[in-house]
Image (cartoon, rainbow over all chains, first blue to last red; front, side, top):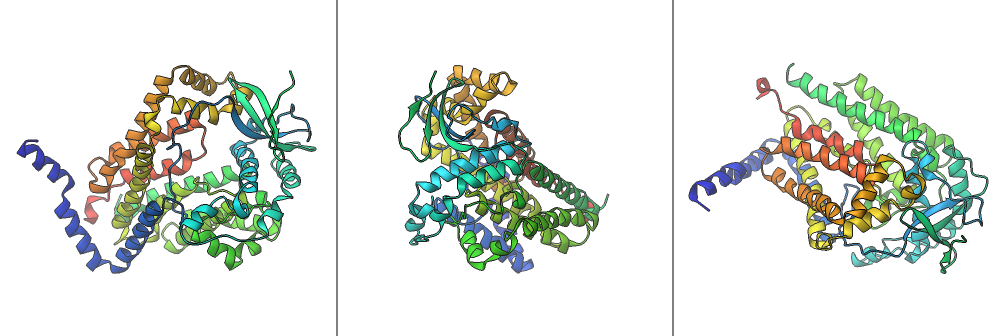
Length: 189
Length: 268
């Protein structure tokens, strides 16, 4: 790189100027400086721990490579309960309601399979803690009933729905799995 | 327009967007009174949720639907009051605290750490401070925003999603599995299907998204490229909404103001 270009980069980022500004800020507004330092330290601690330890946000969505699958799974309400064919169209929900109808049954399935029904328990253990609560799993037993109440509450007529995991491929339903079961079934044609 | 009225213009804009977003969340069934009695108690590995759980606050606010609805009304009302009394910093701080409580309790009962309010918190942050500190607070909020995007970009880089050329195509299939079944004829479905059929185009989109996110590193060092970063935020979240159908558009696009705000010269 030519000397002139280096100078341009240096001028752009003005490291010395920035350092000077920080020193001035520390003297002029010490309480704000402390607030900013705490926030930034917390933020970097979160990045270092590679997990959410504050509500500030930690974004690592879609970072891991995803391989092609036979079917792509999505947990959706099937109505009436016990039927695997009547999938409720969650995209008919008002506004962003479909996101709730995607997230809630998915969380139920994930939490049900997690240690002490805390999906982050392994990360807590990595930080030296352990969630040993005995109530969260008991509470999950009322999910199915509550989910119907919630659907009614947001204006989706649901006499009796239950969350079922469906396997989709090219816009068609291929498989289903009841959440209390480990076996996957082909959808009857 | 003088220094303060310039700040008030941006403040009104940010507060109004948040108030409208909250009303939209109400319409979408995403307020506390909709999920106050869910069987979830998310705490994760986040110390804030544990502190809130131990404090007993959720037992008070989420005790019944009336309490939860009263909180939801208070939250939206606080933003309206903050707009009406734009020069009273205390109301804005109160609105921010209530928004944080809403976020914590919403996630607690959703069983998941959602990020749809993240942008609002950073966008509001400068308005908590006095005029003398305000420009520094704008810079801090801008830096936090840049850190978040850059970290997300580097996360993609190091975790290797960009090294698998059909990864994004598979993500699209997974993300829209049910959408393609229910709404196959919409323009979004057609776009997604085209990208699934042309994995290299999907790969190009993913790579561009990752590079856009990494480019936020420049915002940590200089304000020279801030207008570009503002455009990147809008572009990134438009594509995010269009291709991934995620619900973070309003929250994140509100952050743009941090990158286009300039204090008026007379205040310097």
